[in-house]
Image (cartoon, rainbow, N blue to C red; front, side, top):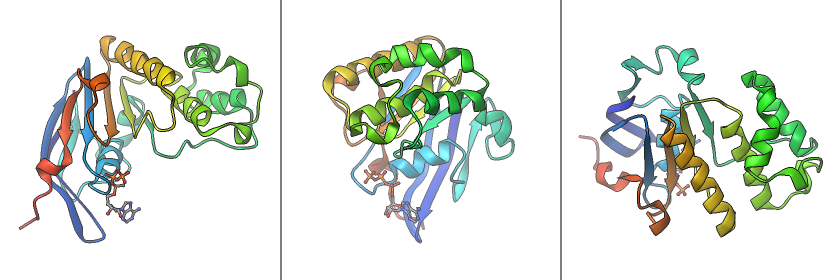
Length: 207
Ligand SMILES: Nc1ncnc2c1ncn2[C@@H]1O[C@H](COP(=O)(O)OP(=O)(O)OP(=O)(O)O)[C@@H](O)[C@H]1O
């Protein structure tokens, strides 16, 4: 279980949120929401171990993730705003690159299949449209074997059919004892079964 206790975050001396508490159990899906600039990306980066909070802590099964980052990192996968792919490599080569890091090369074709990437598998990433690029980035989730998926705006640039596809993959991950935390600007009908954390509920000034 991932647990945030009294989490506070500031950027450029501006408090984004304060005393944020939540528990993310296995088999859960959580949506972090709020307006532009409210701190959704900052929160999900904190949860991924990339942005230490100003105060409070994030524990994974009781251990502070910033005390033992190595063991936490192997349990989670983070897909940020940026797709983190190389333009000059093909889709297959990009996915294989991540799979080598995770030691999961056998899952490359399955990941490509789940995200229906076969038609572009041998095309260079730099030549793809924004939506296809996002699909490639999301393949990182599937080659990770991680229990916790942290995804910053997963549906950015995706058409409605692909959104459905990704929502299905998220549901399967959570049903298989996973925890999926995503960010988005608002809750929609499609996300009705996500628990929502609205950053605005925690953005009172620090005193
Ligand atoms: N690397 C950074 N250095 C300094 N300040 C930053 C940095 N990244 C973000 N900020 C500031 O932190 C605040 C929150 O940004 P953040 O990206 O977390 O918000 P957000 O809710 O995800 O926004 P959006 O919906 O626009 O993506 C903003 O005021 C932003 O300017």
